[in-house]
Image (tube, rainbow, N blue to C red; front, side, top):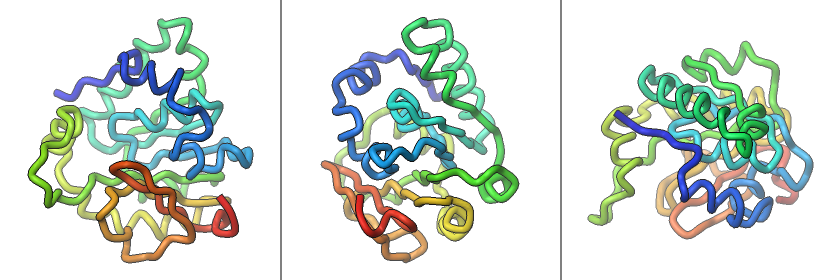
Length: 196
C-alpha cells in the first residue's frame, strides 16, 4: 500500500524553504504570470499539486487508480486537521477517473500538468522508495501519449509535462520551452512559448 503524507518533513521543508515561485514546477506552470487554475491530470502521490496549492494555485487532481485515489483522499483528510495546512488543502480538489475522459467534460483550466509514470530507467541506481512502490502499484502509463493532445485542446494557457531528464518527448512532440532540474525536466507547450 502506498502511503501519502502531506505533513512529511520533506514536503514541509519544500513548502517552507523550497524556493517558492522560483521552483521549477512553479515556473513551468506560470505561477509568476498569475496562472492559478491547474488540473493535475496524473496526480500520483499529489506532491506537486500540494506544492502548487501551497503557492496559491487552485489544483484539481485527477487519479484513476482506486488505491491511489483512496490514499490521496485519506492524506487530504488528515492534512485538513492541521491548521497550518487547512487553507492549502482547501485549494485542492480530488476526482477519481481517467483524465482522457474527464478533462473534456470539465471547465477549461489555464494549465494542465501531466506527470505520467516515468519510462524504465537505464541507470542501475534505485529510485526513491515511494516512487518504486507507486510504480509497482500503478505499472506503466501505456496511454500517456494520448493525454497530450487532449490536454492541448483544453488548457487555455499551457500544458506542462514532467519527464526524467534523458526521456523522450511525450507523444514525440517537441515542447515550446523547457525548464531543466537536477533529475527531471518540465516540457511546456502552448501559450507559454514566448516566455517562461
